[in-house]
Structure formats: structure tokens, C-alpha cells
Amino acid sequence: MNRARTLDRAPTAARDCPADSPAPYQAPATRGPSWEGCCQTARDRGIAAALRELYAPLGPGVIPCGPGGHAVVPSDLATTGWRIWLGGTITERDPAAESVIEDCLLDGEGLAGLRHGPGGRAGPAAGGLDLLVGLGWLRLGLSERLLADCLAYLGRRASGDATLLDQQMIRGDLADAATEQAEIAATLAGATPASLGRRAIHRIHRQITGVDRTLLRLLGASGFLLAGPGRGAAVSELLADVFIQPDPRDQR
Image (cartoon, rainbow, N blue to C red):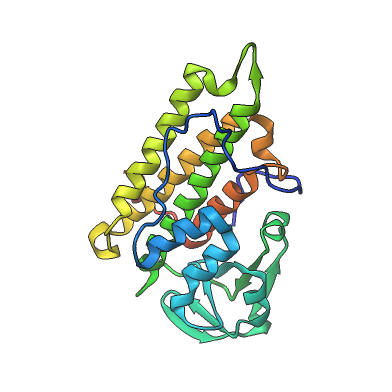
């Protein structure tokens, strides 16, 4: 699992936008049944709660692993889980074939990283793409929360007689990010793994990563420290690394 950035430990920033700061995009209160609920959970309650919701359909005590055998799970599931999901197959957990991945990013979100067995499978089998669609909703919720953090931060930062949020270029970047988020939501809404296909699902995840990186730049240095919301964006990208095996054909 490769991490795109190294962050410090500290609490996350406030997520409420100032009352006089117009938001370019307001996420819907609900997104319907199935995986869509992970979006609102991630946005409102954080990564650990959203992962519990995402993994629940796999069954109790199941630790889902990506193609390389890596897993990112809530800390309690790492302790109590007794089964492993890998490539669509569930097997008994074997502690002798498992190692713990130490990571301050995960610790700060109440998560644990594991690696089970040699991994190296070619890609997701039955149920794998379904999980990636759900993960797309989850990551979209985290991205929407990051946008709200940007609005709050930029609305507080003075620039002459105004704030950074009043600058036209910054507002343009925020509007572009919000538009991409709305596009991702529209693509995912009502979609199934079969209707999207693996390559389209992978493109969605790359699009979320791109939006998040744009928003992090707007946060300046605070976007790359655990003192701000950068931690959630880094973990979001890490989750994509865990569950998506790169394929050069997906870049086309």
C-alpha cells in the first residue's frame, strides 16, 4: 500500500461553513438505498463508521482484503474478525499468515491495517466490483466533507479586505470540484457493477482522487497535516490503493 503523503497527528478542523460563505454545492440529505448510504455516513460520521456499513453485507466478522491481501478495517473488526474475504471467497482467518501494518494515518481514524497471506491475485472476483462501487460512494462522501472543510477554511482566511473564498480563481476551483462531485454522484446513482464495468469504476476512483488533491492544494499546508482534513483524504486514497489493482488499460 503506497501512501501519497505523510501527515502529522492532530484533531481535524471544523467542518461548518461560515454563515456568510456561499457553498457552490450542497450534498443531498439522502442518496437512496444500498451502497449510497455509505456516502452520507462517510460525510457525517467519518471513515470508520462508513467502512462498517460498507463491509456489513459480507457478513459478521469478515475482514475484506484487496487483491494484494491488504485490508483497512475499523480497529474493533481487526481485533474480533475471524474470517477473511479475498477475491470474492471467504475463508477462516489465519493469524500465522497475517501481519499488522503500522500507520499513524489509520490510527488517527480508528482504523487498522493488515496484510493477509501472499496476496497477488489478478483482480476482484464475484462481489469484488460491487464492493468497489460501494467504496466509490464512501470516498465521494469523504470528498464532499473535504469540500465543506475547504469552504470553512477559506471563509476564515483574510486576504486584504475580503477572504480567500472571495477570490475568483479559488471560487472557480471550488466550483469545478463541486461539479465533478456531482458528476460522480450522477454516474453512481442507480448504477450496478455490471452497468458500469471495471474500467469505468476505476476511472471514478481516479476522478475522486483528482478532486481531493485539488481541494487539498486550496487548504495550503494545513491540507497535508493531521491537524486538518488532509488525513481523511489520504486514507481515502489509501483505500483505493488497497482494493484496486492498477491496470494500464484503465488509463485509456
